[in-house]
Length: 173
Image 1 (cartoon, one colour):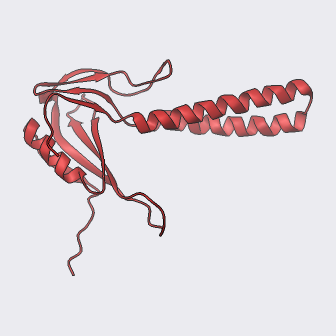
Image 2 (cartoon, rainbow, N blue to C red; image 1 turned 45 degrees about the horizontal axis):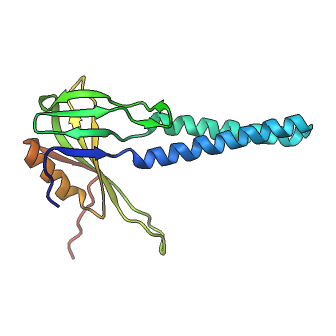
Image 3 (cartoon, helix red, strand yellow; image 1 turned 45 degrees about the vertical axis):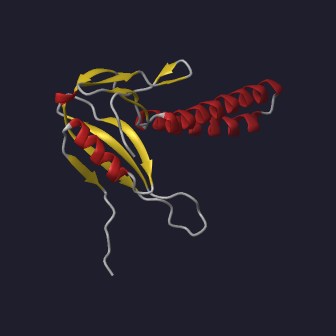
């Protein structure tokens, strides 16, 4: 995979889908709760209120811990656009950062499912690691151990060292 600059990235698509689904389901349950309150089914309304509150709590957690960025990487800077779901801006970095504010390219590995018959494999997120005062920026998502190659290409392009987090161990037989 050859990476060329300027490189446009959007690593927030997965989180936008999760958050849209969580917000939609929370809104639907809230509307159902109001309808059951109006019609006088108090016990059903109470159970829907509990479900809505739990889903709202988890939606807030998803919102707080979502990762992903939208922007453009050039030879001298990273321009990060606001990450939005519907009309809401999500938390995360926004702005223009020069490349001298980043210390490394990090490849962060996540294991795939371990159950037989379950699809999916290992996946990776490639980050630009910010120096103190500069946020880390997710610039690529890969899968099936392609992150190492992508990270090395970004490191070579940007003249930054490459580090790996939770790298899979290779077992020699």
